[in-house]
View 1 (cartoon, helix red, strand yellow):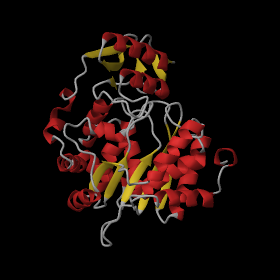
View 2 (tube, one colour):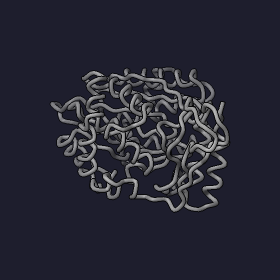
View 3 (cartoon, rainbow, N blue to C red):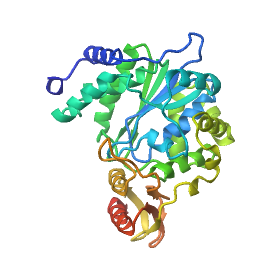
Amino acid sequence: AVFFRGMTDAETAALTRAMLDSGDVLTWPEDSPPKVDKHSTGGIGDKVSLVLAPLLACDELWVPMISGRGLGITGGTLDKLEAIPGFNVNLSQPEALAQLERIGVAMMGQTARICPADKKLYALRDVSGTVPSQPLVVASIMSKKLAESLDALVLDVKFGSGAFMKTRKEAAELAERMREVGLAMGVRTTARLNPMDEPLGRTVGNALEVLESIQTLQGQGPDDLVNLTLDLASEVSTVSRDTLAGWLSGGRAWEKFVRLVEAQGGDAGALEHFDRVHPAPIVREIAAPGSGAIARLDAGSIGRASLELGAGRGRAEDSVDHAVGFSRLAKVGNRIERGETVGVVHARTEAAADQAEAAFLGALRIG
């Protein structure tokens, strides 16, 4: 009935509240700093969380970020974090609280006791063909985020070939519904619409994206990733965008990230040579088939090629290969010459590299 008839904002908020109340909700001391977070509806090469969470913690805010794993062409923050040797994403609430008190940021997975109704409802949606129902999508996303007991939330709602929502209109409708639910629950909620027709940054794949996040935290990130991170962070921060940019370029956010990795059992030493932590057996440069400006590098196609390489999972029970994916991606608008490198594929076998290279060239259009 919901799939065919939809729900009003009040009904969607009531469903969200019921799902939220079906399990545990994180609780914080009354005198604790403001709790803030970001949610992305998912994209290709979207490693913003790895940069944004430590950056916001520099503002003396608490960032209790509960993230998910990748499914289909969309990557997952937990999979990326677990590419860091030893990093533990399974924190109890007491562990998360103690860590927030020490460093202001914790990045963790959802426990079975947070929104258990969501898991049951999703299983029903999956077998009944109602996964795309907008009210059910809104309730699923917002119940999990609101379980963090936030003061402020920014929503990064993607649209385009590499996103769940294909058009800006669909994304705008979803963003507004989620924003209304957040506000109805007493959380200062803002939303930004962002295109996902080309991959974000220049890497796709778990370890490759961690490496790019490290470079960004060290002040050497690609412009699109840096700008999106600053845009989103400034929505919930107490300081200016320029101040955030200074923390990112000046190393303060990097120092916070190192402390985060150490706090969650990760090997901080590995961050200094992360390009050697997960080497793929096959690393192949892809040459441009012609000269001109890059007119398109289709995000959805790159995401599917990355999934085929093993960087993602087709089913929830699948494992992921941290080493594989794409790097050194050319960006739309770049001028290139025939034979110039427009991307690098990282694969387990020559056959997988062949397939990925063909898919990449199919996703590429030179104007």
